[in-house]
Amino acid sequence: ADGYSNLILVGKPDSHNRIKLLQEKGSLDFRKPKSEHDSFIAKTVKDTGRHYLVLSSKDDRSVLYAVYYYLESVLHCGFFEDGEYIPKYDNIVASGLDVYEESAFEQRWYPNYAGNAWNHGYFLWPDWKYFSDYCAKKRINHCWMTGSSHDLPNYIKTISNREDPNFKGVDRSILFEVELMQKAIRHCREFEL
Image (cartoon, rainbow, N blue to C red; front, side, top):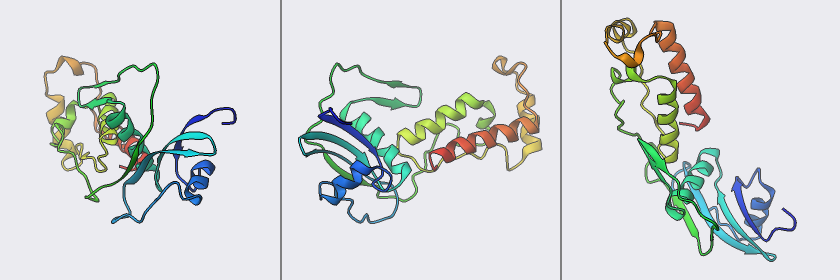
């Protein structure tokens, strides 16, 4: 970081020395949130001749939320169910930002198009990955992933009878479904969903 006058700091005060130092100097206020979940800071700070854009929180998931808040609210990126819009910038100007945000709700569910367990039969790994990534980008912390768990044999029978050209040659066995759901759940846990 030496030699640079403009820096972006992303992380938690307990694991990022520069953020911790700014907090100790009083430049960052990690005030006590109403709940212990999903509060973050997105703030520009000037300290010892340097300009910092700080995206921080006390937990990993909320640090991710701070980054996506900045991308969406300041840089005007768009994250949608069917794609993304990422504008191109020659320079990024970060000044006058002072946001402290906390969720009004501890649990935020997404009423997705796959909220019905029978629709999940159309999901393969890329669909689950995209869906869970989308939830994280939109600061949704609970993901409905029932898969076929409530009636696995009947579910597999129904899936197997579908005449869908997209699934020709795709193994829709019970083992495949269980392994697919395990992989999707592990991926969601990376975001603490």
